Amino acid sequence: MKKILIIHGPNLNLLGKREPEVYGSLSLDEINGRIKALAESKKVSVDIVQSNSEGEIVSIIGSSPGKYDAIVINPAAYTHTSVAIRDAISSTGLPTVEVHISNIYKREEFRRKSLIAGAATGQISGFGINSYLLGLLAAIDLVK
Ligand code: DQA
Image (tube, rainbow, N blue to C red):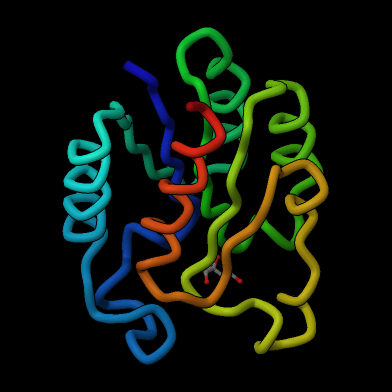
């Protein structure tokens, strides 16, 4: 069975409470439940992690080759700042889908630049929590 790693970046543990007008009212647990249900129906296995720490995310990505076939990541605020996460993704050689709940190109100027996009296979942005489900479908397609 193919294995896909889902990474939620900083502050996404606060989903549901955090700016619900931007990020919706579902909690991270509820979103993870939907991700797992989709994975089960598509017969892939998923591990899901959330971290507020850039270094921890870099380490998790760095140890993913050999364990996972693809990565789906919402790098959250690190999208706009982290060369280290970008380089970690490049180092894996794994298909990687960057996802964002909000449309980052419709928001403040500083969110319109993703340092991650150049290392990702592709990006999904702006479909609410469905961005994760679309991202997972894209990752499944890449590993099949
Ligand atoms: C986000 C967009 C980022 O700009 C922001 O810092 C986040 C969430 C999104 O999913 O829309 O934390 O990645």
